[in-house]
Image (tube, rainbow, N blue to C red; front, top):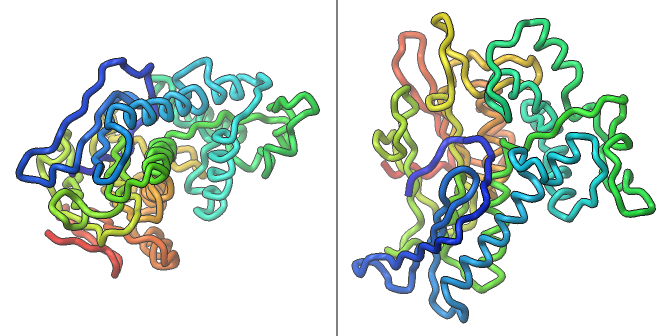
Length: 354
């Protein structure tokens, strides 16, 4: 199964077309693959149906329902979503999902030292990697945006800003009078995979691989072994997942999120300068270091998604220190040496099999 790099969080209206694919007869027939449309692309969920009392079609309906709720709650591309309305300063009646991802974003901002900041949306827009197609802002524009962005402007707990009518007033969330736009691109796909995995576990499913742009896996694959996921070689022009592989990671059968973030697919070049989609929210500018990709193994897909993005901001040395200081995560960092050759570093528990 292929990994994917971080992509923009965009979830269109789900198609009514159902795709249920039974795995080949050479593999265990208890496994099925359920596919559909989600977040600007497709999702694939592979599950072991042994002992499960409902049909794959019913499971797909449950998955699509979850993803529809994600869209109407967290998508910045859906102008009627809770997130879009909040960013416009409108009062909303938040659901548990809105609170949950805000709490996670706040905690991740703290633990990454600001390298991951979900309240820096306008900076990504300005560079053309958010909800708009703008490019090449001036230093003055970046400086102005930087002063009005960041979780530092927002309250720790959204619940304290809920009025007697049950509505959340964005104006009351701001600590400074500034309301920075939230953008959950860095964690929403991983979060979606975790939600689907939780739903599958509630049905009694143990063996699963959930791929909604970012991956969560648990249990064993159809061959009775840990799931294997390819790490693509992070070179410009390698735009097809699985075409040019750097190595293969294999799970040990436990639950984990697996996410690769890289800069070789989302970038543009102006006047001979490459501008990657990784924006450092602390400076407001695209990163310029030699880290090419970061593959993170974490307890869940949202954390793996977040930490992979944070590493691409931090660079090789700071990422290595961050990873070694967090016993719950493993990583493979691929970077370029001064001479141009490619090198990698893996943490002690990263199970590279090829």
